[in-house]
Length: 316
Image (cartoon, rainbow, N blue to C red; front, top):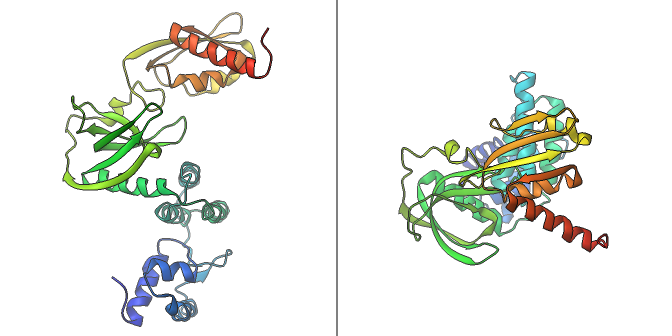
């Protein structure tokens, strides 16, 4: 509801600035005020600064005075890391993401807050595409327990989906967001994984949905290398001695078997829900790793290496 009096407008300004830094024009837009009220908003902001209720940031934006953080150094580093992950995850500008980053940044000590604030400024320059709106609708569908309808553009085909979202997860491999839930247009009722960036024409339906009490999201993903669960597959890898220290420093999951052989080579055995998500990771090691099992993964990696060699004219 748009403010109708000066008092209401000032209260709305303080509420809005409690969520992060804004310029005067940003505030006019966020509060739904007409453009001809810009000068009135600027006068209100000057009054609030004179009263000590607002201050101007180094970037020239208005904000509530920064409070001294109560976080210990490790907590502060955790919060700072969260702001950086938000920045890296969001490929497109989203106002809600910006507010979350700004709220987190305000809790940080000065040195960390300065870097986080600069990141927020850089984030404002990212493009704002359709994916941002899709993310908002998916979040709303999940948190309000409603069905999300969309066309899913996988590499093979376009599929209509009406999804009851059980949870949203970020892949640790590519930082992309995925919605996990049941497509009520598909028989079987088995939870499936849908990448948000492949959703088109998303619409939030009024239909409500429930998450089964026996569904456990962490168990669902327990054997996934990234985000895709499936039948357990045994993967055996043989790493060269040149990368012994690197592979020893790489998180491979609690169930990984890692053994350094007398030769200095490292043997790694993984049990994952399908091997296809492993292909980019294995290829990233180049010629420093050999896939021993399963044969399908070995063949896929060999084909990829062969295609790369042919592209650069390195094959006989």
